[in-house]
Length: 218
Image (cartoon, rainbow, N blue to C red; front, side, top):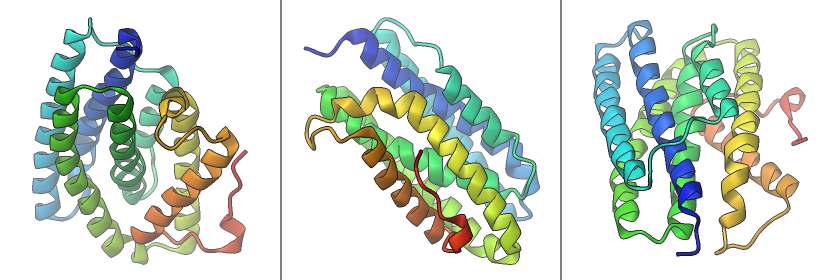
């Protein structure tokens, strides 16, 4: 079709790298959670992510091979995993920001990648990812109220930086293909999208309504 195969392979490769990074997150933080049920869930999620990565790998192999992870996205994953504050910061980074954005991006890509196989893959993976996001919300809604407001502000600043790094490196290459809704000026889209992410963070229990924490997209 009209979409260059290399661009399709690049986009799907970023999903592949995201699955691998999230699998690593599951193994890294499991021992930090004082809940046997949470540890069992993270082991299940690890298996999910590795299965997703294998599916994406087979798909991109059919397109000619996977592309390298974009450096900015690799930086964002490294920053998320190296967070040295409360474990909630890592959970929010992956289970809210990165997993949530991945779910939305899958829908964007399937609109400009008219492939029944990719649509079927996306539906299956989306069901798993929705469970992962729900786990993050359940955990954080119970854990975040125990943290002082200063920690909420620290986590908020950290997640904002991660989000804008990811948006400017990956999503900017994908959003112009949103031919259904029509293109929006990039600053306008950033403002609206970050506001939506903040709303999700608030549902997870992060206190972001303080006036001193208001952010404006640059």
